[in-house]
Structure formats: structure tokens, C-alpha cells
Image 1: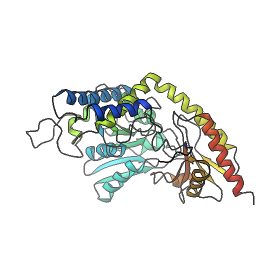
Image 2: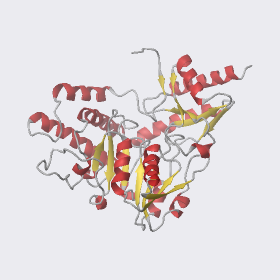
Image 3: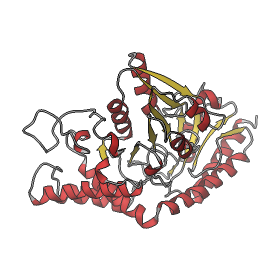
Length: 387
């Protein structure tokens, strides 16, 4: 494994480094427990059950869910979003989504539309990657079953008007699905404002390991949503039918308990620090990042400083892929180049041909690292345009 100095700025993909508490919790579970959750009554199995229950309660508390039974666990954010989309939609339904959505939302919706199972309306975004709440709500009809809206763009970090959309949908029969992949752990989220389904992975801003995610399902649609998979749950094993109640109906197969143990430790640290403190840290990093990048010639910065320390840039006469490769090889600055699994937003940002170079920080990023990264980009630009 390489020991060269790294400035890791791809937190929008996954957070790194994980804390010592997260690593220790995973090690302790694997070495000292190792039992499957929900599969036995002996002491170690009960310990595994306790880990699962702890994370379920902590997640519910963080999003202000009334009942931890509304929280099901999934292998990643994509699976959680697919569980919501395929579990709720039926043939003939109409769906509204913004052009800022991640492919974890757009691809299942596109697939259902291609199969002629649903009708889909995509609402444009502005040059900052933000959808107008009024435009999104105007696309909702009496046939609309689902409105899908990301809480924040993973390309620009732009915060979307979730609160306004939730308020506007209070008298609609359609349900609101929010993708909180970029915001869970870094911004306050309150599902009681009118969010019917909320999905997020645990490995990004909340600091957990890969292989963790949750889906919140509002109690009134527990009976309506169908499981994405069927299989063993550790309960009602004598029946061929899946359990009818949440969260068991959504959790076929063994849960990733060692990862959930790590996530439990990360959530404990998050509670101790507080989401608001994490948000303040992120705002400062975002400010430093955007102010520094804005001073560089031949660099176009997409988006604006918000609560997420994320910026996408385009450099004159240099592709994002080449820029990322140079920054990594010459300066140890690790960024992400391309379209960032967001197929539609780039047409509105003007980055559809090659995507962007994305710089994304996290709560472990320092101001010094941001300064070094900006200086490195500046050096690349000066070298490129000095001839």
C-alpha cells in the first residue's frame, strides 16, 4: 500500500480517513462477536442484534423519525433508492424528478419508462444546478405517484429546495422521495416536514464504512411499499411469504453487521460533535475552497459556496480527466473527474462534453489541505498557459 502524502478531496464519493473508533468497532465485532443479526438467541447473536438496533435508533433520531421501525438497512445508497422506487411504483404511475438527480434515481426511473411502466417528467435546473420549487410542483398532476428530489447535488453541492417542495406537496396524493446522500451527517434533516421516503448511505458525511445505507419509509405507506428482494429474515421462517411489517419486509438476507458496528461508532461521534458543528466546519471549508478557486485565471467554478464543501471546476484547454491525473501524480491531490454519475445536470452547467473536475472536502479536511489543493491547481494552470 502506498505511503506517499495524500490530500484526499473526494469526500462526495466516500469519506476518508475513517476514525479510529470506526475501525476499532469493526475489528471488535469481527474478532469478538462475529454472529449474524436476527439469526439466533445466544449471547453473541443478541450482541449483533444490539448493534443493528443501536444504528436504527440513531439514524431515526438524526432524521427526526417518529419510530425506528421506519428505518430499513441496505447495502448502499443505490440499493436503498431502488428499494423505494421499485417498491412504491406501479404500472401507469407518473413520476416527477429534477435534472439534478443522481443516476441511482434516474436510471431506475429511465428503465421503468423504457419498459412503458411509468410516465416520467424531468424538470430542468438552472446554471447553478438548482431546480425551482415552483417548476417542480407545476409538473405534479393528479396521476403523480412520486416526486424524487436530491437534497444536494453531488456535482456542485447546490442545496435543493426540499422544504418548499415538501410544503407544496402537502395536499397532493403523490409521495416525496429525498436522496440525502450528500447531506446526511452534515445538514439537519427532518422528515416530519413532509418527506415520505428518505435514503442515504452511511459512508459519506456521517463517517461510516462502505456497505451501509438506510431507507426511511413514512408509516402510512408501510403496507403499500413492496420489498425489492425476498429471502430469509430470521423471522417467520416457517412461511414462504415475506414478513409484512417494516423493517423486516425490506431486509432479506444477512445484514452487514461489521459495517453497521463501524457506522454505530461514527454516529456516536456525530452525536457528540453535533450536525450543526459539522455544518459550520463545512461552510468554512466551502468558503475557502470557492474563494481560492475564484481567484485562479482560466478556471470556471460551477456552483456557489454552500453548506457542502464541494466545487466543480472546468479548466481552459485541459480536460477534467487530465487535470485529475496531473494533480494526483504531481501533487498527491485526489479529486474526481467526469460526470459523477449524474447524467442530466451537465447539460445545464455547460459541462456535458467532458464533465467536471470535482473537489469535495469533509469534516476531516483541513484549511491547509484546501490551500495546498488550490495552489496545486493554480500551478497546473500557470504551467499550461505560460507558453
